[in-house]
Amino acid sequence: MLTTTTHTTLRAEGFSCPSCVAKIEKGLGQLPGVSAATVHFASARIEVDHDPAVTSVDDLVAAVGKLGYVARPSAF
Image (tube, rainbow, N blue to C red; front, side):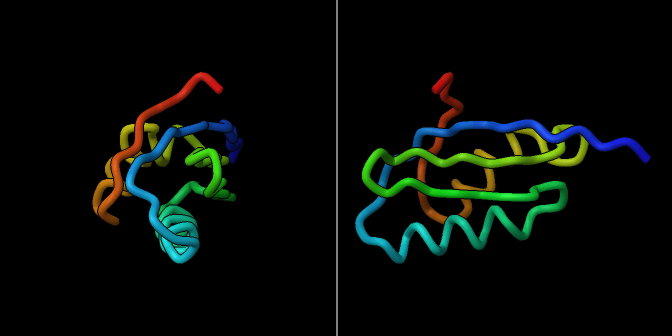
């Protein structure tokens, strides 16, 4: 089975402490098709490596929303 990994960058709002970082990384990392999730606290940037056939960008945004934060796709 061929898998394709895409790197997606999201911009997030609502970070207030470093524990938010761990919460988001853990939440995204549990989604099917996600191989890596890194949150950059200072820049409010979330970088996710995922298989778009399994987990779409909309799924990532929804997952961050369920954790209590607002995220939007970003070009950089």
